[in-house]
Length: 435
Image (cartoon, rainbow, N blue to C red; front, side):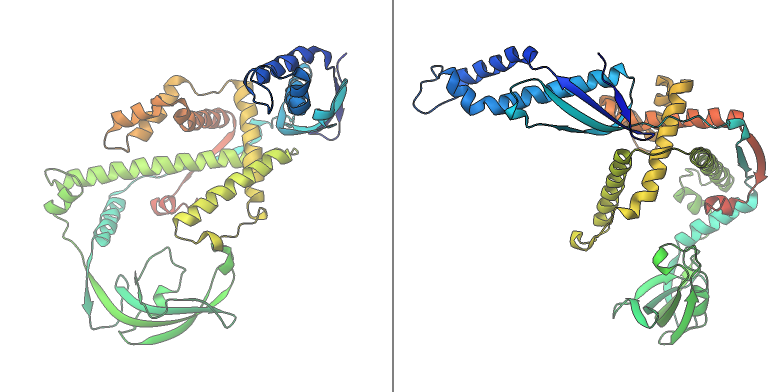
């Protein structure tokens, strides 16, 4: 008779089952005999120990081991019979197995993967971005490369945009010091778009030895969030101003970029091609993110706590390792699970949805698709052939290429059905990820 599975909630189940011990007695006896052959007992020669002594000393451990496997097997039968997709480890309660002398009962409480109806993809909408690379974009890219190769020399004048400055800096929030460079100056180039707007312009016009205090209002969307929406007071002392000397855009410059014959026209063509490839990669990544966001936002179901908990632990471990690599002392790293909960829920929800779509519509990556991903990854290495060989030496190394290729299949399947509109976007916005 099949055990009745009790429904606690949409994703929680409980089942009680009986384990008859008669069929396991021969296995228990065999384990006792194995112990008898090898174990040493004081006062007895090996192999001459009475079975009663073996049972007294090892009976509890042996029965516990055998009955634990019996519970595992019985639970597996129940899961298979009832077509249950268990999420995480079940919570199994029973009497102490080392004390069992007759048929016993166990109770298993567990979570299952949620059942849900896939949203109507035809009602979802995506934006497909388009960018044309112009000669001006190529020139701007060359200018950026030239600035990156600038040589700086000390000058006795006021700082201008694109100058490098050596400065002492202190910041405060609500009158309390938040950060300070101390007595060692830091150096940075004025005009870096990655810094908060207004900071660099506040330093324009200052000479070496001059100090200026000013306040920056950080936007509410700023990262890290600790500064978002805050008024930060700065006191900056310029120690030295250095002016840039840019390389000449000539044959030698082209050669330094890998153009063997130094042909400037060829250099421009290669830069344009590189920009087109980067734009394609970023637009493709944006489209994928739109698909994933749409899938997450258009479905509602309960998430198994076991899966979310495991994902929280994984994200926390990754963050911990990254902070250590950045030089942080492990003693100073304090990570609370709540910091990762929201992202963990999104990741688990997406994983469940993708799994359902892939299985239902047979979108698993093919060997050729996996191979294409491996070749794409390997093209970034000097010896691409050796890199490809490395991937195929261990099946586990193909997990990421396989996963990404499968995700590409889902994106194609989604975009083939949903509503789409096109939108032109400037190159700068694409490269800044502002779309």
